[in-house]
Image (cartoon, rainbow, N blue to C red; front, side, top):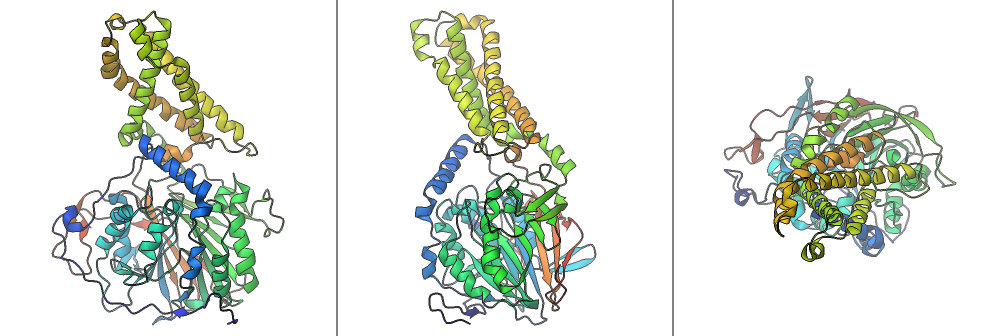
Length: 587
């Protein structure tokens, strides 16, 4: 190893630690017994949540450089972790991402991950010795309570105590954008504790938000913390440079990233620049070969394959399912449109598998008409209020109301501007350089005009009824009690029509599915590295999560506190993916 005192490298076999005291097993699903409160799925279009999340995201983007704790992590332990020595010379790994949403979906996946083994198609797949979490361990915002109720509590209930007679499984976590909204404060407190670091039966070893792990069979795992398209900080680069000095020219690398930038680069060519820079400057000099890139962030499973590596998105750990119908059939990585002059050689990768598949995704998209108002009552209420106020303003402008009514009514121009601004922002128009710039604006304006036309139609209908002539505030009471709820339903359905059309044109696809909070269609990876270095990846899917749970107070100390009332079925998404080991010829 090169003599460099800035970041000492120590091969960590895992700290000796005292076993945590396991509380009595719960006899019910009472939060007082569980120690956490199971939460329902998040209504992503709830007005207050939209406002809060939007402001947090804006602050993180604008001031993230000032709150970025990655620079401060230089003072923390700079070790990489050695898990290459195993009894049989092989190792099993589990990968899950985007997990901290509703209890039913999150715990369904956690329960499967905690089982000693899963039998899939007659083959037994043992629980991973390492559990890799790929980002967004909590939604919607990072906080101590959020992690406790939406991630730590469910995983502790799934594996309350370390399994006896085998090495204790270890958990590593990479932060996603939702983990970043508080500057990584809560994330580091949970996953980078110096003493007694554990989440249920899983211990935690990492001391930073990024990590490198040496695996059996001359494999390495590098997990890079790169968020909001930002640079990779110098302490992180120094950390990985140190670790890379131990990587041999025949080694193979699995690279974990917070987001599948290889897919996002189709619309934003610069999105992949940081990952490409890391590969070129840290890994390429070792002459090792990056065979697998894996990420979450997009809440589905998708795999692109090329001549040199597999590009896998697996974000099905618990958050709402995102359809795959918008994925391109082929991508070029790095994109030729990037402005980086020293980029790696561009290669073509084809889409070979996805879950849910495109027809199922389109079918799920049509469910927006009934799921949108049911999952987001606050959103429907907001639309009803906006429509009612706009209708009253239009009716007031068309009639000769009294002074009190005119003083009470909202100026019509203000309401029209508010609706147009809201629908255009909802369409999220990108920069003028984007190829889809005009498409976003056209769809946003069209949606706004449709909502205004609905208000105008409502005003015309309102003018046909006699109660508009009642003494004030009689018309307001009728509008609030009768008109408001009806127009809220119609306006929400109009928004659903917009989302379907826009998603078909590559706009607001995420909102189409976020507004539905679909819990089924979860996924995770179980990987096996054999002693000869052959890596086999098993993509596993859950078509239907469990929604009925029962406490298991009589179970053993390592058994889950809560078990499914009916069997939880897991299946292969596709055939196992076999990646040749280090001594095989290079692609």
